[in-house]
Image (cartoon, rainbow, N blue to C red; front, side, top):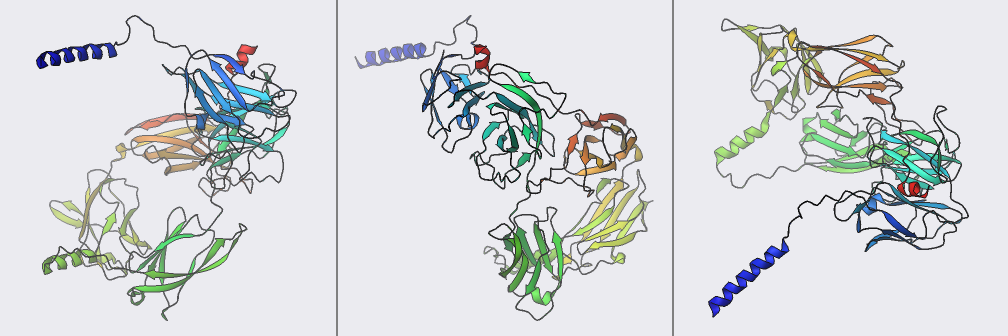
Length: 594
């Protein structure tokens, strides 16, 4: 009897599993129809609106993709609307009070999709007015990166009162929109007047511009009734919205932090202080050691972004002290936002690294101590190099001296080392350059520095150093000829390797219609850039809203340039007239009302 019951249970279980997995019916077409709005309460484009709830009915069950990000209300509210799903409905509860005689737009973007296949409904907006009429004007444009010239897909765009004294930080804009996957933005149903327009990356999702957030702005006000481009058409899609500016161009940039303060400091080595600031320094740091009568001498290094300083103590008697007290003088931002002189007293302590307790043998301890005392040498003279490169030696720590006679550079001829002539040039305490002509092709070079020849400021000696190198043949390189038009006297034409796009490998001044030659280019994929270097400092500079300074313009050639050995390539580039123009998209709901 027990056996019989077990068999019956297994058979029934198999039947249930079969019923639970019916599979996809054969012959049925995939549902590709997007959801449709069947009813709205109150009616879309209502006037004299005084409700606190909106219900939108659909012909099927729907989902909202990332509603917190994709659904926005304009004008923005401090208390964001609560958006939820209920059966085949989207329910919006308005939690904040509404302004009188104001048109509001609930923009769902492309967030609405059907529940089964994820078919996207497309752009959808619910519009209402607390006054007697719907505002009829619109603005549209495009936000892109100031430096990389690509679409900014996560920006919000705000319209503010057209005031010369506007401080946009930490206030809600009068109207708000967001960019799509093309960097395109659109304001529908706004009042007919002039505005200040600012785009920003809303990192904390508060719909307000914060001082540390990337932004873009237009210096001149934008007017809904006056086209900025006289060639631009006035677009009337329907009885609700009219566009006269549809191609506003905003270039978003990361501002230099306005606050300046000492962020961190450390003493990882006896002979080294490191000071880290929150932003590039606008002054020089002064340091005074308080617990020594000896006049300290420092070798100072700074990182490329100018926000960190490394102080190497050149006095051995001072660096031997475990604890040093220092008085620092620098500029720091006060509570009013002004840079003022500031004095800081720091305790700079060095702690010896903890020794491995497992190493008990004297031999192991001695080897470890010896290893710590040795100094490494690095060089670009290794493998195959460019025959026109500046040869260099870099030391792990600042050194006391490097003598020419301690360096041997040689080539092999019939198994005999033949010394090569060179000139040694000091760049700083940690870097020396070697000047010598290189024979391109098969010539092999070797550079040697024996151990215990060079000593650093803490008494560490160099490790034995040997490196072999040769120079590429001239046929290894390619050439690029660029003809550029539509620029001006401030333009620099720059070339960068695709693998390191922010590092310029070659640049030349723009010459209208003249061929720019880039020669001796190793085979690689390159990016061609045009920089409007308005301050002639040879680098791209960011913008400043307070000073109303736009970031320097930069354009990138639309195609990557692949260059091979012994190749020549020609490129023609027209800088003007390459802006992207986008026409506003009529909301689906409005199409149905026409």
